[in-house]
Length: 251
Image (cartoon, rainbow, N blue to C red; front, side):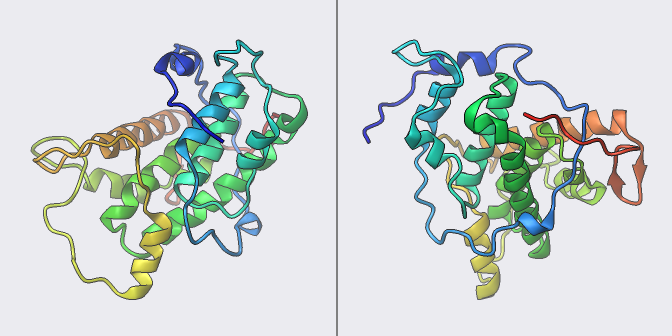
């Protein structure tokens, strides 16, 4: 289906102060929800994702009410087997639904879908850790912490992951981006993991000094989540846990 580029004004509700609410109820991911296989080719369209988000927000040219969706968007945003880029857009969609207070129809299952997506994002982050946080995996690694942290998934706030992110900052410039030296030859197993974890971005700016605009933005967002959690919860055994995990709300 044809999809014109979305005007920034159509996303204005999501940029307003107070739209994004910090979690006060925490939950954990379940390994049993991880996909047995991921899609080999990332055919997810950002334009289609934009269209569905505009439908959700009710800011399209037809001035529809928020929380109304086409069958196409229902299918796209619940498609199983997504990895990386696709998974992020699916989670962003249901997070936006929560912030918009959509609770009917498909959105009765919002928490279940967020549980599913963050279980798979946790799996991807563990894969990234297992291959030593190779540079192509870092952007998505930090994005996963940002999104699932906002979703209230406490296990993304691991102290060793915080230490890893801090170690990637360029000491002189303060930004995040491509390391000065990166191994050119990697074992095939690691290359396959990177294929799953790599994220292609529509809007990215690489500067001549190695700084990356999106990489830096994801680092700031992830670190902001760590600051919030460190202020709320005391560290214990390398994890940041709520004293008593509480079931999340129904939407």
